[in-house]
Amino acid sequence: MEPIQVTKPTPKVKVVLVHGSWCDAGIWRKVLVRLAKRHQVYGVQLPLTSLTDDVEALRRLVERIDGKVLLVGYSYGGFVISEAVPKLQNKVAGLLFVNGIIPSEGQNLDAALGGNLQFPSDGLMLPDGYGNLWLNPTLFKTVLAHDASDADCAVWLQTQKPLGLKCVYEHVTTLGYKGLPCWYQISDEDRILPLAAQTAMSAMVNAKVLHLPASHASLITKDKEVAKFIKGAVSELDLTL
Image (cartoon, helix red, strand yellow):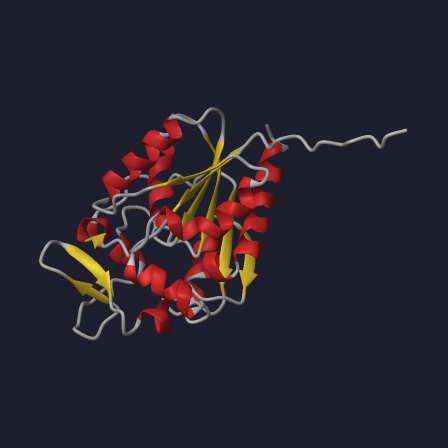
């Protein structure tokens, strides 16, 4: 007698990965490959020109997806997914933040980071003459991704997408995380978003938390663990549908 093949049901909730500053959806490549083996997963391409523009890009993608979604926001992507929820026609089942920056009422990104954004010649963020911020190559690995390989750092740095100043100073109009289940992956060795800030933000949204010994680049350096955390969130949400 041939063995009975047991097929796991396809998860009902789809996953939408939302990148942060100075990168595009490719930053999720390692996590996406792991998720795509069994989940329907999408990566939005944000223009990073303003919070409004980024939310609209996410809205247009989610509009094309049938059923409920889990929005996963990395870093600045936390701002985007929080602001986007009311515009997504009740499709959002939950929010998951990966080193995510989560706004309080009426905040902009500058305020959420403590109002300390400065642009000295030797700072992490360098302005150009076109209203954008770029990462300083001399500080990038030390501050943002000290545990990443030289190859991964080189690809990220040399293909970085600049962050528009409008993304930094545009205020949120809603707190979409209210009333939704939330998860938060905290990177204990993050040098750009302090542990205390991540802890406070995760508590603010009553999130289920995963701590990882990682830099701000955990989605690259701890992709297996991050993907497993996302899968767990999807499994929990599937039980509620």
